Length: 231
Image (cartoon, helix red, strand yellow):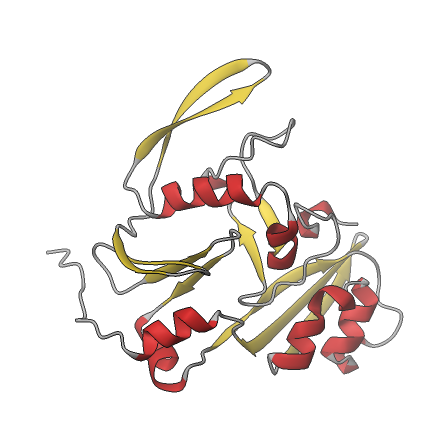
């Protein structure tokens, strides 16, 4: 397994699918106190694995602080010592909705929203996506990118379907609901191999798996556009 593509919680391969997985950048400095080797969580994970993890309340608590604050100090413990760090907050400081499934916040300056599930996963929306949720009760998001495969494909990968790719990666079970309910549209773009590394460039669009109480709220939610005047 390529650790760059290993789920932080289950260790299995993560193929990036919008709304179904997340790749968390290290500069976000989201703390992982359950990890004895790393103070901060960095890399990919399946949302289903986060929801099932005993660490999801800790993850959510710190993600809530990160998303809904401006810059602030945080502490970590490493090798028995306490360290203080300055973390850049994301600025989603305006509460918009709170329900059984999670909480929705709007950015203080720009047209951007984050929905934080009770079990941890984060979902970011722009105005077009919020309008789609309100008008249609659904939203479709594009994703994909570049991923490094764990081994060389055993047949021409440009001919593979998404199911074939997931079977090759041995994670079809983790993506069963994507295949069954979210109408994924997978497109192969490019494949390259060098020095024992195998790179796949792809795109994938799919419906988002969002809770009904959020969808119901968005049906009646109106907002005034805002933008930051840099001048």
